[in-house]
Amino acid sequence: MAIEPPFPELDEYITAIGEAGARLSDIEATEGAAGNISVYIGWSIEVRRRFPAMETIHLPLEVPELAGGTLLVSGSGRRLREIILDPASNLGALVIDPGGKTGRLYTAPRHLFTRLTSELNSHLAVHRDQVGLTGTNFHAVVHAQPLHLTYLSHIPRYQDENQLNQRLLRWQPELIVQIPDGIGLVEFNVPGSAALMSATVASLRRHRIVVWAKHGVMSRSDLSVKRAADRIEYAETGAKYECMDLSFGSPAEGLNAEQIRAICKEWNVEQSIF
Ligand SMILES: [Zn+2]
Image 1: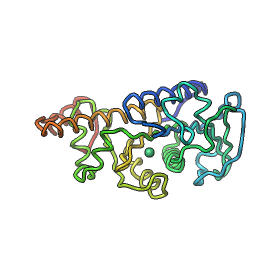
Image 2 (image 1 turned 45 degrees about the vertical axis):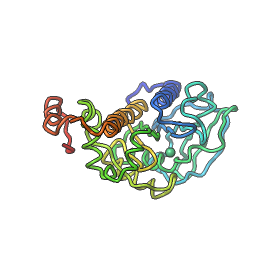
Image 3 (image 1 turned 180 degrees about the horizontal axis):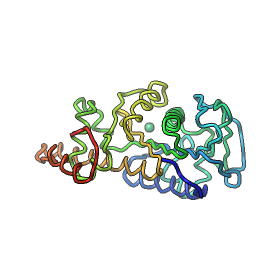
Image 4 (image 1 turned 90 degrees about the vertical axis):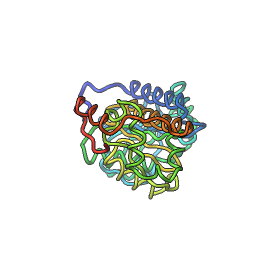
C-alpha cells in the first residue's frame, strides 16, 4: 500500500493520532504514561509551523530506508489520552537525515518531554523493515498495554502462538476477518531492549499485531494509525471473552474450526490458523 497524492495535511495525522490514543485509553490499554505511537510519512511535509524548535538527535539505530521521511512520535512519559487535547505538548516531529544516523527533532515551545518514547528503537526498526520490504510511503506503529491480552500472556498455555490464536480468534466472526494473519507472540524481553526490537521486527513481518509476553502489544498499519489501534481493540476483545470464559469455568464453545473456515470461505479470507 502507498498513499497517493494529494497527500493529507499534517493536522489530519495529528488528529488521527489523538483519536487513536483516546480510544486506547477508553479500552484501558494505556494506564498512566503507558503506550506510545509513531507515524512515518514518506513525503515531504511542513512541520515547522506546528513544531518550530529544532535539535539534532542521534537515532538509536541507523534507518537509511527512512531518510527524508518524517515521523510523528509521542514523547517519553506523555499520556496517550492527552494527545488529542494538546498535540503540540505531547508529540514531536522527527525528520530523518540522509544516511539515517541522525534526525532533526522538531518540537513546540510548550512540549512536555525531553526525549521521544523509550520504545523508539522498536518503532524505528519496524518502520524501517516494512518500508524497506514494501516500499510504502506511510506506516503507523502503536504500542499499548491492554489488560486482558497482557494477563493471558502470563499464563504458560497462552505462551504458544498457535494456542493463543486458536483460543482468542474463536469468539466473534469478525476476529479472523480483521486478524487473518494472526497475532504474533514474542517471549518476554526487557522493555526498550535490542532483543525486544529484533524479535518484534521478525514477528511483525508475519503478523500485523504482536503480543509482547508479560508486557503488552505492538500493532502496525500501512493504512492509518486508527487501523493499527483497531487491531489492538479486536485482539483485546478476543482476550476479554477468553478471560470471561475462564472466570466462568469455561462453559462456552466459541466458534469451532469448521464454522471459522466457513466464514473465511464466504468472505474470501486466507488464513492458516484454523
Ligand atoms: Zn510498554
